[in-house]
Image 1 (cartoon, one colour):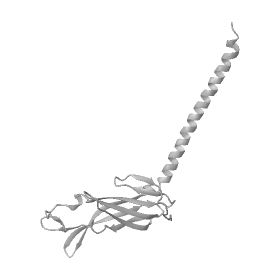
Image 2 (spheres, one colour; image 1 turned 120 degrees about the horizontal axis):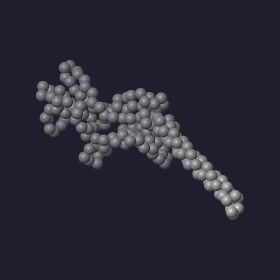
Image 3 (cartoon, rainbow, N blue to C red; image 1 turned 30 degrees about the vertical axis):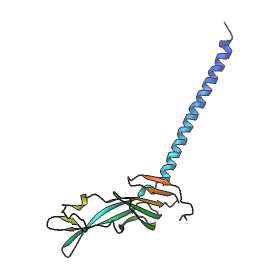
Image 4 (tube, rainbow, N blue to C red; image 1 turned 90 degrees about the vertical axis):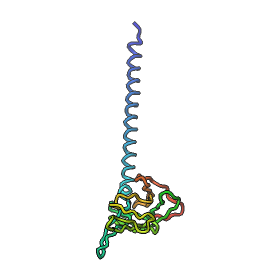
Length: 184
């Protein structure tokens, strides 16, 4: 019988075991590093994910005349303000755009008027609701189900000076700062 079985085989088995341990340790390390990156990304998005905007219609009655007006709700559900808020509106079916800016949005929910050209008022008649200034004056039973004639995106800077953009589809993306822009 050869001495290979006695001397070389145990050395090879130890070497293979060592390589396996290094491989397993490396895989565990990579998995932990990925988890850390994911936790950092979640922590980074924590405040930004609580900032949103949406259009809404609100009914009011003055001297027996019922109207519904449109406005934009801005909501910051975090405990810190966000800064340099810019709302960009794009009129549906055109290349016309409008914007609105605020310097600070404190925590809470706020109502903001829509820019001229996007404001709408519905007036209640005996036949239904009619949109003021509309070329077609066929009444609708409820304006709340009517589509908006614009899309919008909101950009802002969070309390940690990170730039964000909530797109028209609701997704949130980190933005690069604009050169020369002063952070809060």
